[in-house]
Each structure stands twice: as C-alpha cells, then as structure tokens.
Length: 254
Image (tube, rainbow, N blue to C red; front, side, top):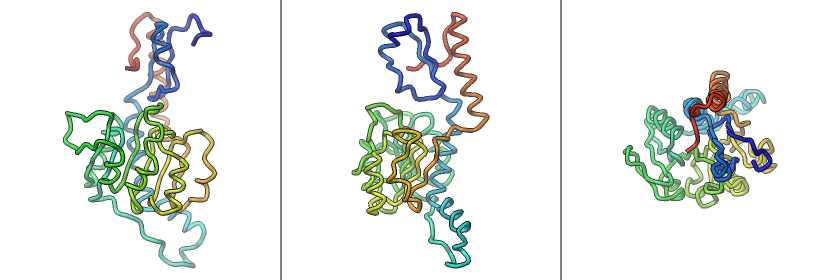
C-alpha cells in the first residue's frame, strides 16, 4: 500500500479480506471492497455436501467400488445418519444461516457460536466453541479469517465433538489446528472430517494424505461454479467501475 501513492481502491474478488490491512487502507482514504452475498448459496450447498459425503461415506464408497473390494469383501462399513442429529455452526453469518436453513430441512437441530449472540434467531447460542462441540453431533466451520479465529478449533474442540462426530471446514484454513486435527483423527478422538480450506494453500499437510478413510480433502472450491465465479468477478469489477466513475462502490467492507 505504501508503495502505491495513488492507490484509491482495493477490490477483493471474494468474501474474505483478512489479507488486506484495513486500518492502513482507511488511514490513506483507500476504499476496500469484497464480493459478499453472490456466493452465499453456493458455499452453503458445498458445506452440506461435504457433511453428507463424510457422514454417508460417499468418497470412501466410490473408492471401495473402484478398488473392486465390494465383490471381494462384501458390504462396506456403515455410515452415519443426518436426520435428527445436532449441528453446531461456528460462525452464523450469511453463509452460516444458509447452511442452517438447509440442515433444518434434513430434520437437524441447529446450535451456534458467534463472537456475539444474535437476537434475531431462536437457535441455541453457546458461549464458546468447546461447549458448542460438546452439544453437537456434527460441526461446521464458516468463520471469517484473521488472527481472531486462528486455531479457534483446537484439540479441545475436536475432543468435544467426539469419536463419532464430524468436523467440516468451509471457512478459513487457519481456523482449524492442522496438527491437532491429524492427531485427533488418528487417535479416534474425532470421528471424521472434511476440509475445503487449508492454512497454507495449495500445500496440504503430509499428515493428512494417508487419512483417506477419515478425512475428505477438497481444493478450496466451495464457490467454484461457473455461475458464481462469474457473479463474483462481475461484482468485483462493478465496484472498480463505480470508483472510477466517482460514485460509491456497491460492497465496501464494514
């Protein structure tokens, strides 16, 4: 920022803007924009898809058939049900609410933890991630990034979710402690996990690669459909055009 004295706008093509030093931009009168809303439904779909894939062992089932184990070994190990289970959502913003609506349709009970309790919803609120994990059968992470949420999901949260629990992360990679996750899965303190985001993308911890029966890995593609990426790109450029035209950008960050 300091090397660009005429910089007037930083337009992020995505919801997260934790890589931008907001205070430095604000002090110089620089506008920062992102692309909220246009990817909400897509990411919510994907979060639920990962939960279903983990619980019903979809990826493991595909591998079981391709390796010709079905004909040799018979029926595969059973999965877990979704209906009637408790879902803890860590981060009940736009996307978290969209996930909650979908999971209510599956007959799930919803609870959440945020930095602050929401007055506009009736879901039970939990004071911290550990108490939410204790209550929940399954746990979805959809928090913003930044130091405030770094390793928020640590070993104590994973143990709280438990040996039959499922952890899904479609938020930010650093929110989940990678080393603690690998240990929790190996030791059986956490049942299953599904990750779309990682702390050092595109690098994935070596400890994750041989946990294929307990861990689903995806290449950060929750919003990656043609429709949504076009909408994100268009909104990003609409923000730039508005700035260049001398008007207020559509989606400045808070």
